[in-house]
Length: 189
Image (cartoon, rainbow, N blue to C red; front, top):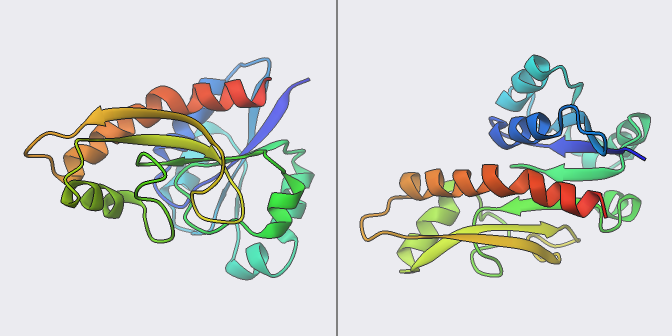
């Protein structure tokens, strides 16, 4: 039976677009919905271009009532994917999707994770710490930032003259290469 995904994103949506394109025409998995907490997020324009329904929600919709959960149910969502989504997932969604929420983090957890560690902040911290490598971690989501079960990691070297921007470019390549396949492998077990 086909599994339906919803993607949550707060930014431009390059990972969301990559995931949608990966599963286009797939007999096992379909992206049914893209959700964002920002009405001007680039991911919403990508969703429109890709022909995927989208939904924008507020903080109260996410944390104080079941509106987001009802939208997911209305679209028969089986799995949730976080692709550049920065809010902590509330308990009602974790209960509704136990071990069925997947996140990607732009560092090798457990290092450089937690609240406020995203995007260039992570890359800056990694470089400042003198790390020799960085990478991506794909993990299940629980009630705490970046502490769920790790499903997959991939790494890249950090050069002597690395900048947060150059490291981000390397990390994006890892995300694009591995995230859709890890989602597929997890969802279609």
